Amino acid sequence: MLRIVRRRHRALLVDRGDVVSSLPDRPGPTHDLFDVLAAAVAAFAPGPRLALLGFAAGSVVAPLRALGWTAPIEAVDRDPRGQEIFRRMAAGWAGVVHVCRADAYAWLARRRARFDAVLDDLSMPGLEGQVKPPISLDGLPDLIARRLSPRGVAVVNLLPVPGGSWREAIAAVAAPFPETIVVEGELWENRVAIAGSALPPPRAAGRRLRRALAALGSREAGRIRIRRHRAGR
Image (cartoon, rainbow, N blue to C red):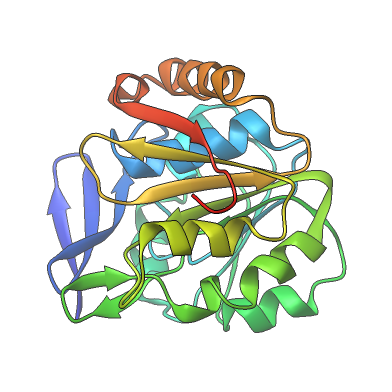
């Protein structure tokens, strides 16, 4: 059951005890995983067209805007409840954010334009917390690859997968792409996969991502580890 928890200068969207969105009341860092997702888009997308799959309450919008991402954001989510608190808190600074109420796969399949970045932030309730929906590992990675511009990037917030391993989950989202790097954090169990055809080597990618996080003022700049995904690992 979704509920909104108000804190000083932010609102949390909580689903069965798990925070699925952390929305500041102004552009800036969240000091958690959402900063890394936003910084990955800002650091590696070759252009301004962004598709956000799984909007919830729009946690990545505040760090993206603080990083200078002024372009419109196209997003999709089946549940409109997070959008209500987003519109109340962020109307004055969020810029153009279009959110469609629809199934993410069906919405992306209907798109004909190419995106410079597609951010998969989809999740669903599991027996022991939020998990990744099966479509994010079986079907959606290929669709994302087809909807990206030639140098576009996919950024995937990977959660635990029931009955599967991290290795299997990362391999599934990496399969359609020539290059994938994986970001791990000290304070969250998720993995962030960044995939595309024109990524820098892991060490250079790590420097670029940390610079973006430092420019944002996020404490995550000193908490992340980056490695290259290799098939079979």
